Image (spheres, rainbow, N blue to C red):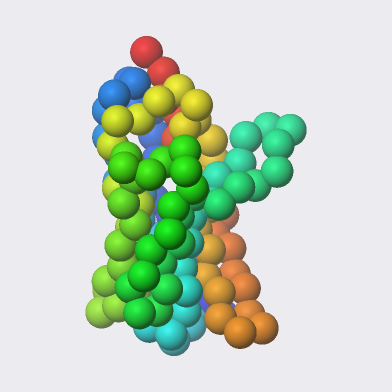
Length: 115
């Protein structure tokens, strides 16, 4: 059974930092591309950051220079370090795992940026 379990969300003030984690089980983690997406009520889920099995990264323009995605293939975990957070970063953040023909999502973790 495949599971992606996110953690690390919460309430933070503007300018603050959070680190999200996504622990994977039931997949051969090292061969999967991993990513983070986010969604706010009434809007489509949007890509935040991705990291390939080889470690190449890609970011949405809105988070470049502020967010960093990384992975630990031994711990089977992908991270999203979020710095200089803004109120517009408020959303539910979802972990994603993808490989040819296969795609899995976590249950999401809420991030709220507010003073």
